[in-house]
Image 1 (cartoon, rainbow, N blue to C red):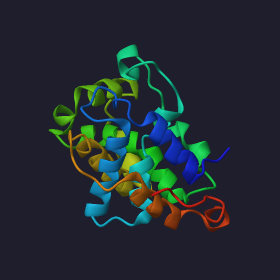
Image 2 (tube, rainbow, N blue to C red):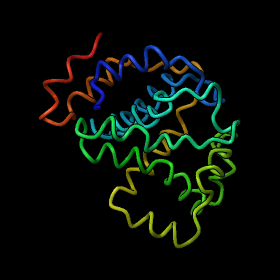
Image 3 (cartoon, rainbow, N blue to C red):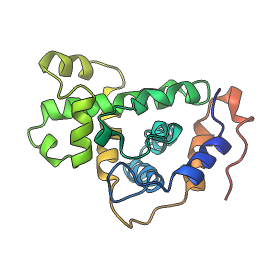
Image 4 (cartoon, one colour):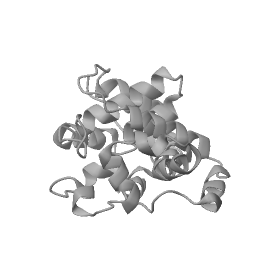
Amino acid sequence: MALTLADIETLYTERGHATYAGEPVSQLAHALQSALLAEQAGADDELITAALLHDIGHLLVEHGGTPTLQGIDDKHQYLALPFLRGVFPDRVLDAIAGHVDAKRYLCATEPHYLAALSADSQRSLVLQGGVFNAAEAQAFAARPAAAEAVALRRWDDAAKAEGLATPGLAHYLACARRCALPVTASSLGSPAS
């Protein structure tokens, strides 16, 4: 079943205040910071929405703690896709689906990237398949959505600043509404203020 904007708002309202996997921010703060960084970079509504929703898969399941500390790859980048398909364009879904592989790619292609990852991102990297080899990195780079997934990954990495002020969830749900697929936009409802 597809998520509506009201469902997304409820997920972030009810579960978004949980700590974001060992980082100094909540799930909601991380989502809002990611969207803010996308907005500041001049991204359009689709990429801002992808930045907002890239980790929503973490909110769809309860792990009772930090999944990586339990040796779990929750495959969050794919978990949300069935709930977002038919609601948002493929461009939003492709960026979300690719942001984990973008980390694996950047570790393979940028010498200092791996060392700059947070401890949790380094743990999850191992669970997610590790650093790409040269052939995997080349195959990732050839994907049509690779550059946007890399941009999302960089916003994701930087969106862990404790206490950073951001616009509220309603601001970014408005972006999501503007880029929602026409067949569903009228049924998504208006985000709360």
